[in-house]
Length: 154
Image (cartoon, rainbow, N blue to C red; front, side, top):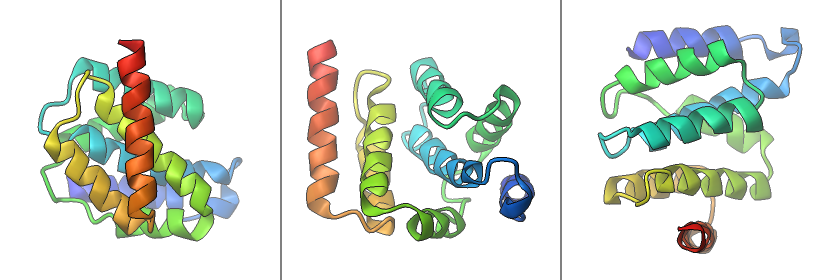
């Protein structure tokens, strides 16, 4: 499965200058991290899957086929099989701090999609936020804002 994910990203990340929309390369790296949050608790719900699909299609303007391919690979992958380095380093290189905080907020939204945040999801988000060099205070701030929005909408 790691090979399939690597091949997918080699096709999409290897020659960003030849892509019609170069920012899409960054969005694909972002999508990979969001997929990691979705599968963190070993229980990928239909609500989480739908929320992720909506984020990827709408927010990141990925095609339906790219979203389906990416999600299928992520769901089949075993725990700890992915090296996040290529995705995290690309995001750190091109996203400014506020964009990285926004990505952490998206991770929280995805974790809340099924109505609660599992401790494994929180751990994964914390780990990814650390790798993205998002401060602990901003990690907590995005968590509390998302939690408040979720409780208000409930």
